[in-house]
Image (cartoon, rainbow, N blue to C red; front, side, top):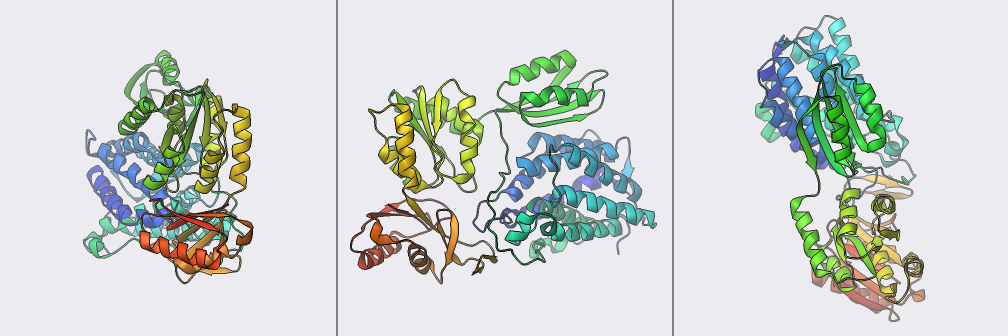
Length: 544
């Protein structure tokens, strides 16, 4: 085995540059490690974007000492953190930098101490730490590092090999600690991401990176069989709130804990790390000016970053504002798919926020859409169960009157729109639109992203799935079979209209054949076919 007893800042940077490339090869696989077998996870993507920002700053380090490079990595990670997984990853790098402060190089003992510090800082950065997550993995990896050093290990390659072995074991054990993972038969995505980063660093340090183009990162498989209970909810990776405000605060006798306590009530996703002379602050807030005013009373601020909406999306909202006629009540809807967006626009929606599976819009994006439409009364249609809670934050964030119809599917959104009465007041429309949404049944057809088991259903990877009102109720030999089995769960003699929205990966002729089959078996039904263009779901079918 290759013998390396110390690591310089330059080598540290090269290790994690290689690790980022290694992570990129499996980010989509990590995204797929969500607790529901449909494609709606983004942990791998968030961690990859955070690592890219980490490396960008690392290459700007003023010197090649291990301390200088580690500090730059921590700074870059904090500035570019995406989602909860990215925020925790930035805290891990912050702890590493603290553990290596003042050092020119890093030996095995220094690495073990720095990992311990990483685990401690990561936990402190989370309001409610949970076992069975990336926090568990970093802690148990650090414990392994300390044990190896205590046993006399001086080779960094051997130490890192032991660390990734411990991380792998920890990730594999996450389903035993979190019931939601056990039920789905998957490991924690954040923990898998951290393992992949460490694995990539090891491959580089051990000289095995030359084989990387011909290999893929190891995705750890749960040793537990999937449970029979379907998870009731999935926590969103991103917790956005207002403007993403980040800056470095310099001064004398700064008190990070006191600053953190003061800012806790001013926003969300708060991170305050540093010492008595320099503190880095990250917060999502609706009033960044208030944060800056407070900070300037403590010292001087540097490297200020305030990120609002993407410029292109903001321009799009302005165009929508110009096109939308002034009305008493406007409707804002969240929609994925060009064809479905056209349907919602034709039914009178004033502003469409792109979003759905894999791209849940933030509170900020919804709020800006609400503010952009020229009306003081707003009805919001989330059209996705993971967006409803985000939408419900809106009434307290604007002076406009906002009502949220908790639509969880596209068909529910369409039904609500069709019930809208231009002559009725807001409370009346809210009531009748919600009643209309509740009367619709939704069938969704997609393909499983992994093998799993739900109840009595044995599901193979890429097998067609049928969901009825959000619950997986059928698997099929092909898409048509999945549709037929799912529709069989409904008494179609009691319905009148079936609307088939076919997705971006589905051909129009295939959708027409599906429609013809339904008409042949149920002559009482009016069956319509609409190009939805939605991603991931081959068909979304409205039954009313």
